[in-house]
Length: 309
Image 1: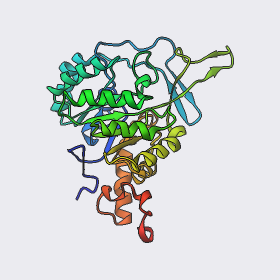
Image 2: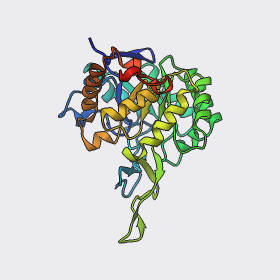
Image 3: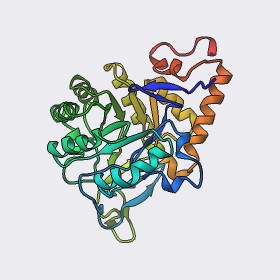
Image 4: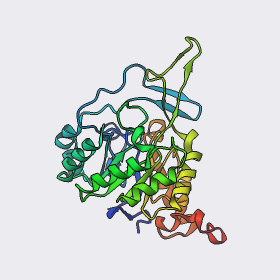
C-alpha cells in the first residue's frame, strides 16, 4: 500500500511532493540522480510569453541558512516549452505543473490559452517573482489584482489553476482569500523573501539586481506560519514550500495545512533531497501507524497526534 498516494486539484499523484519552480529547470539536470517520475509532480521553470535571458550581473549569493537569487525568469519562452520540452516530459510519464509569469493580465490569459490545449496538468500563476520589473511581485501584493488575474485565467482554461503568492506583504490571508474567491483551485505558499548582501571588500551589493529573493532553511519559519494562517481561512489545497530540506520540515508543512510540499533550495544542497524526503515520510507514517499522508494534513489545527500516534 502506497501511504503517500493522494489526490490534489483533481489530479491523482503517487506522492504529494513537487519541486519549487525555478530550482528544477525542466528536470534534465536531475536525471543522472533519479527519474523525475519518482516525484508526485514536477513544477517546471517559470515561463514567459517570449524567451528571456534573465538579469545581468551576479545572480546568486549564499547567505547564512539560505541563498539569494535574482535570476529574473530566464527561460526559453512558452512556445518552445510546449513544442520541445513538454512532450518529452509527458512521454516519460511525468505529471507537469507549468509556472507562468505575464507582464500584464493579457499575457497571463494568452499563455493560459496556449496551455489549455497542451498536456500540462496544472497551471501555476507566478504573481510573486521579486526579480522582474514587470508583473511579478507587483501583482502579488494586491488582493484586487490577484483576484482579477485569477478570474481572467479561469475564464479561458479548464485546467486546475494554482496561485503562487509572495510573502512580501502585510496580510497574506486577505490575498489568499481573494484568489480563492475568484476561482483559484489552490495556492502555493511561499515565494522568496526580499533580501540583499554586500561585498565588504568592495562595499558594493553582491547581486547585479541589488535585491534578490531569499530562500532556504532561513525562511522556513516564515513560510510555515503563512501556511498555518492561510489554511484556517481557505478551503482550497495549499502547496507548502520555503526551506524544506528534510522529512521533518515536510511534516511540519503538512501539519500546518499543506496538501503538497515543494522542495526548492534543497535541490541545490542535495539533488536527492526530494527522494530522501519521500522515504522519510514513508518511515514516519509506518512508525506512527498512520495509514495515509492525508491524515496529517492540518493536524496542528486539530490538537496534534493522539497518544503520540
